Length: 294
Image 1 (cartoon, rainbow, N blue to C red):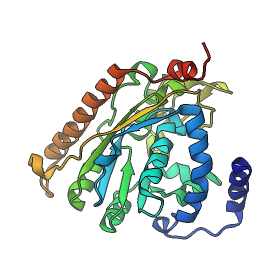
Image 2: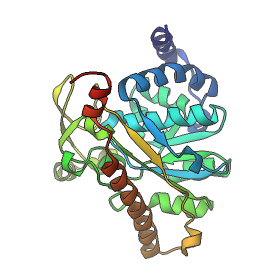
Image 3: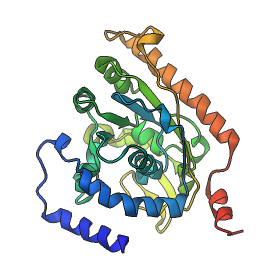
């Protein structure tokens, strides 16, 4: 059974040695084995539709997404599965993940073997220099835990590191937008003010302290949690690559220019996200209807 094999592989992680270099932990053979159970679970629960993967260039690129669905982030895993199925597990592809994830026993080892690395610009630059495709969610916790009424907003805050990374590496940005994942959990508030008062950013690089309704806990508090996402049809769309140099942004750029470039990418993504929302056919109701549940 795929699920049994998955559990055995998970248990075996505890006995494996972890390479000191986080960029050396990705294991294509492991991804190939996990792809079967991950794909099966995602297909059955979310029935994700991924559009326009052809926009990914063969050359290295920085894939920039909007984050949804809390810490579980089902749209992120759905995009990874779609990538592996289309391009194969051997093609070098990595994702930047929050430092705190790697401190969670077993989970950090697991995502490391799938290609996740701590989210630092130096890691992204090194991987892009090696010819890899690198996935980043600039909004991070701000985007993943946005309140319900803001679920269709692209929220990057003031973060601009992804712009500097793309410019310094000389690679295009491939935007990705998605809908449906934020319907898997009801986030009542992101708790940004409380997080600021508690100094969570200084302590853990976390800017939110969300309060959410989710299964099976009912009410959950905090950004590091595990819940069972509600079945929700997700739609993911890749957009044409954005060449920042072609828009007049150069490798050496001041803070104002960096912010302008960030706004260009964010506005492009927001327009595409608005279009995806207008098209509909996503969310919990769409998934339950497809399953015959009225």
